Image (tube, rainbow, N blue to C red; front, side, top):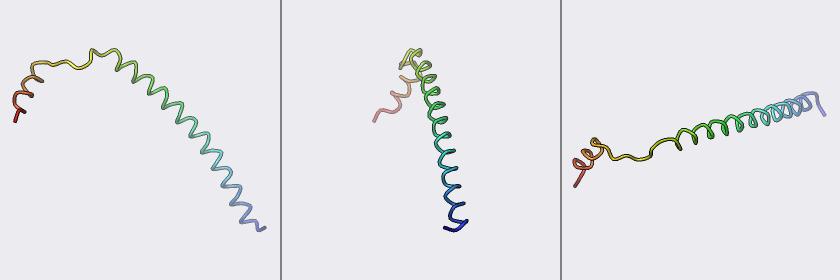
Length: 62
């Protein structure tokens, strides 16, 4: 086996290891962000039909 082939295999394994670590970190950060978004959305009052929404509905009728 040539030195070039051995080096290519080693580089691939290094990159695969780094990719696995990076993927794990990305998943952990994504879960923390999703948890934060859930907290924000659950504290809102939800849909509210305010005056400007009613005006839009009136103007959008066909």
